[in-house]
Length: 162
Image (cartoon, rainbow, N blue to C red; front, side, top):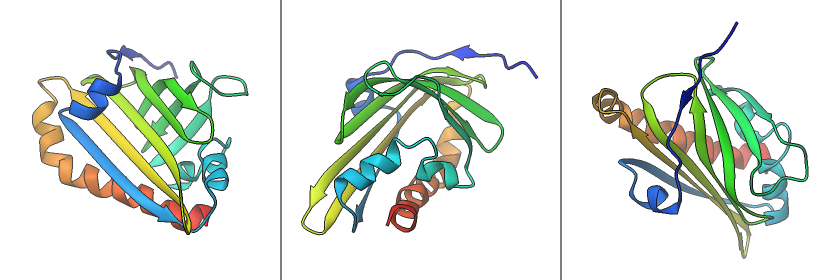
Protein backbone atom coordinates (compact mmCIF):
# COMPACT_ATOMS: atom_id res chain seq x y z
CA UNK A 1 0.00 0.00 0.00
CA UNK A 2 1.39 3.38 -1.02
CA UNK A 3 1.29 6.21 1.50
CA UNK A 4 0.75 9.81 0.43
CA UNK A 5 2.96 12.15 2.44
CA UNK A 6 2.00 15.70 3.44
CA UNK A 7 4.85 18.10 4.14
CA UNK A 8 5.02 19.75 7.56
CA UNK A 9 6.51 23.13 8.35
CA UNK A 10 9.88 23.13 10.11
CA UNK A 11 9.73 23.63 13.87
CA UNK A 12 12.27 24.82 16.40
CA UNK A 13 12.57 25.78 20.05
CA UNK A 14 10.35 28.87 19.63
CA UNK A 15 7.55 26.61 18.41
CA UNK A 16 8.08 24.19 21.32
CA UNK A 17 7.48 27.07 23.74
CA UNK A 18 4.53 28.71 21.98
CA UNK A 19 2.68 26.03 19.99
CA UNK A 20 -1.12 26.35 19.96
CA UNK A 21 -1.34 22.83 21.42
CA UNK A 22 1.41 22.02 23.89
CA UNK A 23 1.62 19.12 26.32
CA UNK A 24 4.42 18.83 28.90
CA UNK A 25 4.79 15.89 31.26
CA UNK A 26 7.51 14.98 33.69
CA UNK A 27 8.02 11.70 35.49
CA UNK A 28 10.56 10.64 38.13
CA UNK A 29 12.09 7.21 37.65
CA UNK A 30 14.16 5.14 40.09
CA UNK A 31 16.71 4.35 37.37
CA UNK A 32 19.99 6.04 36.45
CA UNK A 33 19.80 8.63 33.65
CA UNK A 34 22.00 6.43 31.44
CA UNK A 35 19.43 3.64 31.59
CA UNK A 36 16.57 6.02 30.79
CA UNK A 37 18.49 7.45 27.81
CA UNK A 38 19.32 3.97 26.55
CA UNK A 39 15.61 3.08 26.67
CA UNK A 40 14.66 6.22 24.72
CA UNK A 41 17.16 5.47 21.95
CA UNK A 42 16.74 1.68 21.74
CA UNK A 43 15.51 0.01 18.56
CA UNK A 44 12.43 -1.01 20.51
CA UNK A 45 11.74 1.95 22.81
CA UNK A 46 9.35 1.92 25.78
CA UNK A 47 6.93 4.11 23.81
CA UNK A 48 6.66 1.39 21.17
CA UNK A 49 5.15 -0.88 23.84
CA UNK A 50 2.21 1.49 24.33
CA UNK A 51 -0.99 0.58 22.45
CA UNK A 52 -1.08 4.08 20.97
CA UNK A 53 2.24 3.52 19.16
CA UNK A 54 1.75 0.77 16.59
CA UNK A 55 5.07 1.18 14.83
CA UNK A 56 8.41 2.87 15.40
CA UNK A 57 11.50 2.60 13.26
CA UNK A 58 14.74 4.52 13.14
CA UNK A 59 15.54 5.38 9.51
CA UNK A 60 19.11 6.56 10.18
CA UNK A 61 22.09 4.39 11.06
CA UNK A 62 23.75 4.53 14.46
CA UNK A 63 25.35 6.43 16.04
CA UNK A 64 22.40 8.81 16.31
CA UNK A 65 22.85 12.57 16.37
CA UNK A 66 21.61 15.78 14.79
CA UNK A 67 19.92 14.81 11.51
CA UNK A 68 18.77 11.38 12.75
CA UNK A 69 15.39 10.36 11.31
CA UNK A 70 12.66 7.96 12.32
CA UNK A 71 9.05 7.05 11.50
CA UNK A 72 6.34 6.61 14.12
CA UNK A 73 2.93 5.10 13.46
CA UNK A 74 0.03 5.87 15.83
CA UNK A 75 -3.08 3.70 16.16
CA UNK A 76 -2.32 2.11 12.77
CA UNK A 77 -3.78 5.29 11.24
CA UNK A 78 -1.19 8.07 11.22
CA UNK A 79 2.49 7.90 10.40
CA UNK A 80 4.89 10.78 11.00
CA UNK A 81 8.41 11.20 9.71
CA UNK A 82 10.70 13.04 12.12
CA UNK A 83 14.14 14.65 11.95
CA UNK A 84 16.16 15.42 15.07
CA UNK A 85 17.61 18.93 15.18
CA UNK A 86 19.07 18.53 18.67
CA UNK A 87 20.91 15.54 20.06
CA UNK A 88 22.77 16.08 23.32
CA UNK A 89 23.87 12.50 23.95
CA UNK A 90 22.60 11.17 27.25
CA UNK A 91 20.61 14.29 28.07
CA UNK A 92 18.32 15.77 25.45
CA UNK A 93 16.94 15.14 21.97
CA UNK A 94 14.45 17.21 20.01
CA UNK A 95 12.79 16.65 16.64
CA UNK A 96 10.63 18.44 14.13
CA UNK A 97 8.00 16.62 12.13
CA UNK A 98 8.91 16.50 8.45
CA UNK A 99 5.95 14.68 6.91
CA UNK A 100 2.63 13.17 7.97
CA UNK A 101 0.47 10.53 6.33
CA UNK A 102 -2.66 12.54 7.12
CA UNK A 103 -3.66 16.01 6.05
CA UNK A 104 -4.38 18.68 8.63
CA UNK A 105 -1.22 18.97 10.68
CA UNK A 106 0.96 22.01 9.97
CA UNK A 107 3.75 21.54 12.54
CA UNK A 108 4.84 18.93 15.05
CA UNK A 109 7.78 18.84 17.46
CA UNK A 110 8.80 16.82 20.49
CA UNK A 111 11.47 17.36 23.10
CA UNK A 112 12.86 14.68 25.43
CA UNK A 113 14.96 15.69 28.44
CA UNK A 114 16.61 13.28 30.90
CA UNK A 115 18.01 14.72 34.14
CA UNK A 116 19.74 13.16 37.11
CA UNK A 117 17.92 13.23 40.46
CA UNK A 118 18.97 12.04 43.93
CA UNK A 119 16.84 8.91 43.46
CA UNK A 120 17.40 8.22 39.74
CA UNK A 121 16.25 10.34 36.85
CA UNK A 122 13.56 12.71 35.66
CA UNK A 123 12.15 12.40 32.16
CA UNK A 124 10.36 15.44 30.71
CA UNK A 125 8.50 15.08 27.43
CA UNK A 126 7.07 18.03 25.50
CA UNK A 127 4.72 17.51 22.55
CA UNK A 128 3.88 20.56 20.43
CA UNK A 129 1.29 20.63 17.64
CA UNK A 130 -0.10 23.16 15.20
CA UNK A 131 -3.09 21.99 13.15
CA UNK A 132 -4.47 23.54 10.00
CA UNK A 133 -7.39 25.93 10.60
CA UNK A 134 -9.83 23.16 9.55
CA UNK A 135 -8.45 20.70 12.12
CA UNK A 136 -8.10 23.22 14.98
CA UNK A 137 -11.67 22.76 16.37
CA UNK A 138 -11.21 18.97 16.47
CA UNK A 139 -7.85 19.27 18.25
CA UNK A 140 -9.35 21.73 20.72
CA UNK A 141 -12.20 19.29 21.40
CA UNK A 142 -9.87 16.30 21.83
CA UNK A 143 -7.16 18.19 23.73
CA UNK A 144 -8.13 16.70 27.14
CA UNK A 145 -7.85 13.20 25.66
CA UNK A 146 -4.50 14.04 24.05
CA UNK A 147 -3.24 15.43 27.35
CA UNK A 148 -4.37 12.27 29.17
CA UNK A 149 -2.68 10.03 26.56
CA UNK A 150 0.62 11.94 26.78
CA UNK A 151 0.52 11.73 30.59
CA UNK A 152 -0.23 8.01 30.40
CA UNK A 153 2.66 7.34 28.01
CA UNK A 154 5.09 9.30 30.19
CA UNK A 155 3.96 7.52 33.36
CA UNK A 156 4.05 4.09 31.74
CA UNK A 157 7.80 4.52 31.39
CA UNK A 158 8.07 3.89 35.12
CA UNK A 159 6.95 0.29 34.74
CA UNK A 160 8.73 -0.27 31.41
CA UNK A 161 12.16 1.16 32.23
CA UNK A 162 12.18 0.58 35.99
